[in-house]
Length: 396
Ligand code: NAD
Image (cartoon, rainbow, N blue to C red):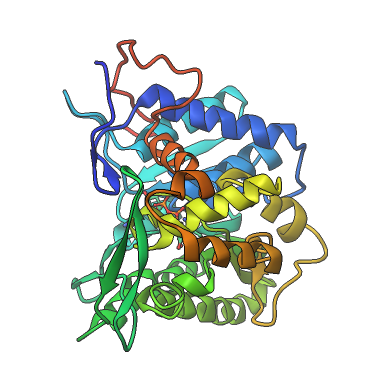
């Protein structure tokens, strides 16, 4: 099958197995080039197939020779329809990990459910005994609650008042004004239920009750803060309320882990193009301006550079450099005053006509296609590929 990108808004309906595999190999090469990290050896990654979770799995495996179990929600290919990028990424990851002699098994299913938690617990008991790092990197628009069975939907809305600002359609480069109505009804509670910390706590409780957490275990969840321009729709909006809840849960979880000297952390990461972030209005325009500035300054990072730095310069050092709210910050370069003041200036002047010059729209667009395995250097897209890839550890 010859696979081409078919986009609809901020999603791409197709993905390319060879391009996805090449992305994974590039990330592995990056981590390998940075040398070994004295990190955890038995790691569970929840949300392991794309974005920051995939980068965490690769960093643990190839930076610390860790055994990894990955949990994600992805689709295998069906005849005439390619699988989802996370499926192809995981197939490629497992193949490379096994080649390197590393244990790697994966579970494809709803991480919010009791069944998947149980499956993971059983797999840890059977294969690893106990684990010493849990990365929580889920990004989902919906959650079926395991107790009530009710399905909750998250929304990306400001709280209190209408928000109007610039945004860009990154396919066309058209800058326009967008207006988003404030949250209403149960929007805030629903978003907190989906993207807040309750499920992270449920995972940690399930793992602790099953006695599969090692002494000194660490767990890390990912958060975002961002600049003034996105504040009303991000950090002060419904998703920000969910992040506040997630960040507060780090303390609750640390308390619960006292007996085994465990610690829960939140790492605030940089804004990056992922499937989750391209869905948020205003963010693509911000990212394209930010990319331009950070690339010019030589401090641009992708998911893999962020996570490799998180492990090697924060998590597995004596100095986590926590902020006043107890969070790890690898968004430190993004949030530098000089970087942010340049973003503000560019933001004011950004128009359809000048964006390709003052912003890195091309970088944004390339990163977006790369997520689905397209426009990856070295891949021959005219070549027929086998889309029916399987993940070695999963019998579908
Ligand atoms: P992503 O969309 O690339 O990855 C999400 C992962 O979650 C995938 O592996 C997906 O399969 C998995 N997933 C989703 N629903 C699931 C379910 N029900 N069951 C099992 N797995 C499921 O997202 P990302 O951008 O890497 O985000 C990960 C975390 O990082 C989020 O908490 C996000 O808020 C945070 N973060 C993102 C950014 C950014 O700019 N992208 C910045 C800072 C922090």
